[in-house]
Length: 83
Length: 160
Image (cartoon, rainbow over all chains, first blue to last red; front, side, top):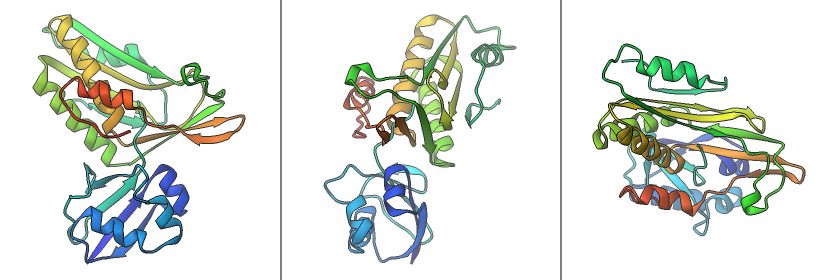
């Protein structure tokens, strides 16, 4: 299936892109993150397990256990700092 | 219902916002508001001088997330209305960043609801601040104290 992956702030800068379309068999956010890490390069650095990476599925704050479905929008970003 | 959440580059006028929020509602006896502004330096962390600040957000999610926070605020407190305005884009030191305003019959619920909504927004709304300093640009780090502030309301936050 295909999903849209969005990136924000420092992660967007590190990957030099705000979004990309990914073909995946991942069942949840954690598996999708694993797949992106396996791409190596900037992905492996920006999304590394040791880093504070927050995520959202279909624009709702989620975690690595959140299920992924066909056509969904998954976002990876650093801890938020608004207000 | 009038617009509850605005994400905008333009500045806002607190007096106008408060007037609009309590207009035509004779039940209102209290209004509590909060305004956050851009610090020119961060003395608490001995950080560098801030020349300007760039605010990024997640269009679509930001509005939805704050709408849900306002719904939760209504569930928890006896308030009549709430309004959130958050600016994005390039901001100068001293500029207004965010405002929260809440109305209720008596002050207690407004004070609490305003603080709750602000604590919630700090750790759960998708905004990111980048500071321009004489040493270059840097993304602002999230603070554990903000997670703890939300924790006081019984909501666990692992943002920072």
